[in-house]
Length: 522
Image (tube, one colour):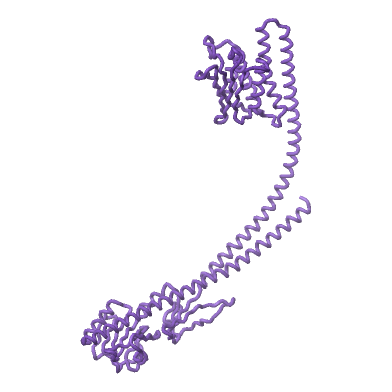
């Protein structure tokens, strides 16, 4: 390989390597960006899902407290005793385990009905355990509301007798005022069991803070402690570490939900992608290097093969020229033999002997035509057998019946090219059959000779040949005959690894001959 080619190949190699590794780093950069976007979308989806669950909680609980309100107002209207209303409250808590307390508080803040759901079961508290909640914020806020309006508290802890209940029971309170004939009677309320509801967040990987920034739910922080999470934190690439949403209902801020992307998954996927990308780039680099080595090797081999081919082509040209000359000389020699036979027969008076000389000429001519066609062809191994048959049989008809003969010739041959080892014996066979047809088949000088050659499964062929003349004589045994022509037909068929059958279904003399193409040996 020349110096210029080496420099060009080296430049291509370096440019390819630069492009491969530049593309690898760009792909990693794009992948990191995209996976971060995907994880951010997942984080926001978790927040949206959490918000939807909070809204569902709010809407269901709002409907429930209004349902409790309607129950007790109906009892007021029907002058039902409070113990009957208490039983309805108890039944409600039995049906819905999301609430651990249902109450009716009068205008003075005193609990009139209270039903608790504790570890000991659901029970109606006796009057001695009822408390005054007049100073509690939810009482003061709810008593101001109109009929049908609902007060919802923030996330905080259940308070009994002025102290936070231990163990902690986080709760959300839903209260609404109750009326008797448009007269305010007090308030009714439900304490939602946040512990039950927080279980619904276990699949979301989110945190929950109340309005005082206290942790009500998060796997990595102590529950009910002040949160140490900085929701505004950003990483070294200025990406937010946390995503959060402030949830408020009816214009009141109540709590915050937050989450963060799965950085472990991001790092693992990024590391895996970097490894696979660098591995691919390294393989491509090695592949290009190997490819260039192979190209160089192939170039050297091709250079050597080209030299061999040029030498072989030169020898082949010499061989083809020699073969053409051989076929030309064989054809000329066969024509000389034909001319000698013709000259010799002119000195013979016996017509039968003259006929033998003439038929010998026809046979020699059938071989000469093959060599002539090979000499004229660019392909020195095969001839177009359709063209050969037209020339062979046409010459026979003209030679035996004259140029103004009444013999019709029908030839139907597939696109067929046969080698010399098959063409000559098959031509001699056809020559014998056509000669017999012209000699014996047409008493009045008129008739038709038909020839059809079709390909079968390689290497087999089938030949249909015959005439519509007088037919085969009854006194001649087709299989066992002393005539030279029929003997030649059978011998030539055997040489072609074939078989000769007479077709008696048609008028005249017809043969069905199967044969194979004889493989040439070099």
